[in-house]
Image 1 (cartoon, rainbow, N blue to C red):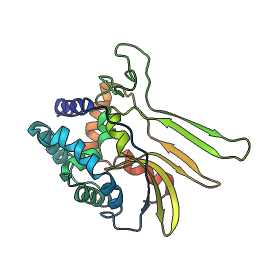
Image 2: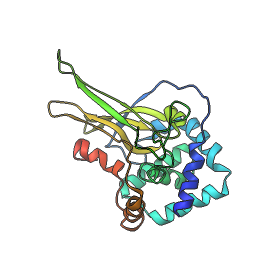
Image 3: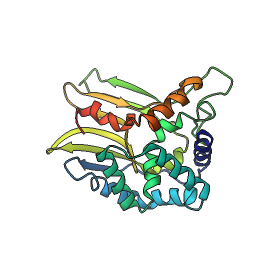
Image 4: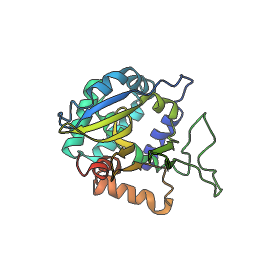
Length: 246
């Protein structure tokens, strides 16, 4: 299965083109809304981009479809709330649900590729020089203004198929009970938070970065956590860190 997964992600890495980067829209996500419906507006906005990505890279590939089905079969069902969100994303994007299910595992599974490649083509150099010690990946800078205490969080993302992801990016304001909980940088079709911030006196900020785990144990651990113990993914747990509740 490891070889199949690498083939799947290697194909996605090369799915780049020269399309222009679009403005980043903002959406309000009400967590009191049924999970199947809470991302409806987001997915409808990005429907064409999402389906174009799927159609150009997966739709006509029997091999990739089989790999996706194998991953889903090994993974099993997600926690009920995430499973409901996935159903909603699949419904409004008109993309097969198994593809949406695998998309929720991208952060965990992309570590299988490192140190083969985890790159941002054609915007920069590889994030890891094979055979060398120099590594570059996601990183962030947090600064507080000495004048008014405003906190600014700036970060980069080195995800391999960046030119697709850039046009699936949006800012989300999550609320519950009429109160803002946190804001987040999100990728359409992916429920996990890439970057999040909780405002206020005791606020804090959060970001997901590239991991460089040793290969000799990481792949075995990943398989055990995802496909044997079936642990909830780190991205899905991020909102709990930001708010204490989903």
